[in-house]
Length: 165
Image (cartoon, rainbow, N blue to C red; front, side, top):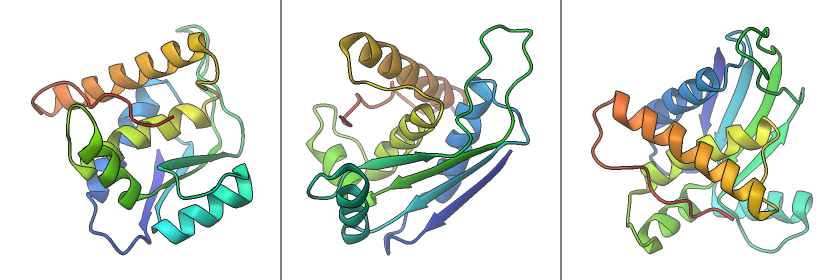
């Protein structure tokens, strides 16, 4: 799995954990190990510009996903995993820090970035949360992936509750 993590945010973030959880999420979703992903952390101004340009919405957001090859997880266990260029996930540590601090289950910026990385991966794989059913499916899968990753590493407690919209 080729995953590049680039921190252009000016903030210190746990790039190793972002790489690790992205790799875990893609393996869990049975994406081909030769697939490629890029994760970029940006500052608030850059995220606000992207949010306005691509979503026509004001202000910065926490995570944006830009799919490339529209890969989907295999539908059956025996199916060949898809391979290709997944796309880009853009994270904003400043927004993540605020969301983690404001969440009912307060958590760190890095924990929020880990959850947002999984959220971005799921968007790249075609998951969405526009309808109540989609929201239940996507956030349930997101929690299962983050909880599984945390459990494998002996980290305490469940994953943070979803704060992204």
